[in-house]
Amino acid sequence: MYKFSIEEKDLNKRLDIFVSDKLNISRSQVKNYLSCILVNGNIKKLSYSLKLNDIVEINIKTNNNNNKEDEDILAENIDLEILYEDEYLLVVNKPCNMSVHCSSSEKSGTLVNALLYHIKDFNFVGDKSRAGIIHRLDKDTSGLMIVGKNADIVSAIQEQFKNRTIKKIYHAIVVGVLRENFYEINLPIGRHSIYRKKMTVREDGKKALSYIKVLNRFKKHSLIEVNIKTGRTHQIRVHCSYKGFPVAGDKIYSKSYSNYSNLMLIAKEIEFTHPISKDIMKFEVDYTDYFKDFLISDEI
Image (cartoon, rainbow, N blue to C red; front, side, top):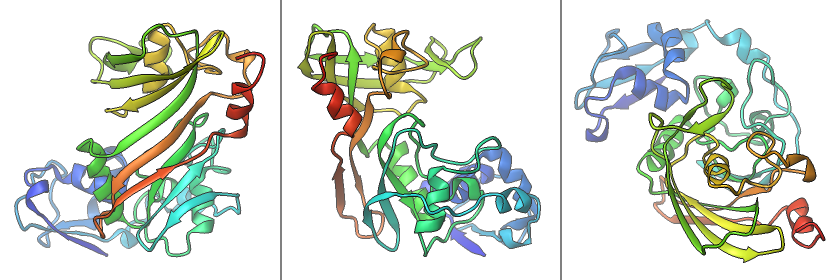
């Protein structure tokens, strides 16, 4: 049983959006828990607008709709680099070629499978396939991720992402020698109208803002630092490709991807406020071996 008292920050928020945030599930999945959600002791429509001091109770133990799918998701002893851990959250360095969460076609070898094994004090609710996941990285992208151990922590840090108070720095090797030292790319991104797994720059897309700084230039490539102010799917990859300097090794947005061993994109730094202690948490990882090797190769 989870009980929440509605504060000003959640005033007038739809009930399904509030529960989606707390359980870390999609709004469509919230429908499966309708009978388990009470507002001031009563069942309300999912479109109900929350009022100040409303009491929302979520008791998913009485829900049997999704248990079978969850049973298929197993804890797996997968090597995981944990940079920081306390009773509320942890920061991990996700390797390349690891999906963040499980799906209908991939229920093994994901970050969630590893987390279910390594975290002994996990206290999540809702969709087990997304347990603790606050934000995501593409399967081909390595680097830093924050994981919450309970619904309140997940929700609190997601709020920081929504308010854009979290600093995320990526490093990438891109194809081509960039002329300018700095780039501001403010182009909306949406799903491709034909290739549905692909994103593209389009006028009716969602706002996407990326700041790029050139760190080094080589004969055929450039090393860049990217500070993203929004978190759209494939944002860095789409923006770089659109501007004519795709990320090296990008199988979706670069024609020359076969010349590289991996996608040359790393979530290198992250900075956020700890939801409980209010300390500023800063983390940075080193380049992966394949990233380092390419930087000193003859192909650079």
